[in-house]
Image (cartoon, rainbow, N blue to C red; front, side, top):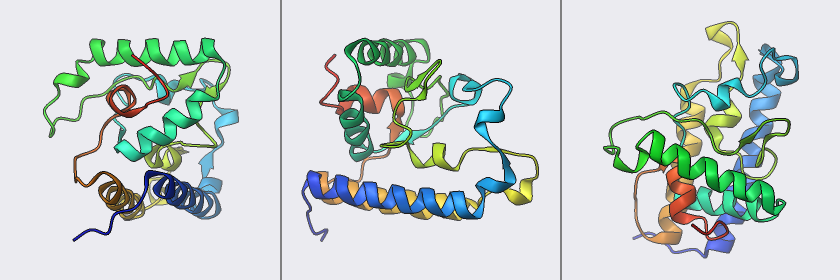
Length: 180
């Protein structure tokens, strides 16, 4: 039996987990990657509709929604539009659970970057960087273990073990701060 936890407490634990994970990635791996501010095409990796396939839990969508609610209304509207467009264009709500459809991330804003970078950035995005050598990449197990911890937190709050879904679908379905 899973011991229940409140959403508020779980969001706090999620933030702690994300902060610890970010610190570890920065200390151990990021120095081996090309810094984003030196990129020739900033945000290309986030906007590449043939590359992005990040899935998140309901709990992570709630954290993203809370971060988005503090943005100016015009940015919220653009996130809402990009989310709706990504779901429609890439047929994300029709995806088989085992199918990894790709999409452009609706959380990237040209000229600003990731709108939830310091507050609710998903773990796969934290791990992502431009590494020139394969051996410099963080081991897959680091991300898998952290994502498993988030899935357990999610189950403690919502009582289910539903699979994570594409960022746009998760935002639409579970972000109470962005109405559709």
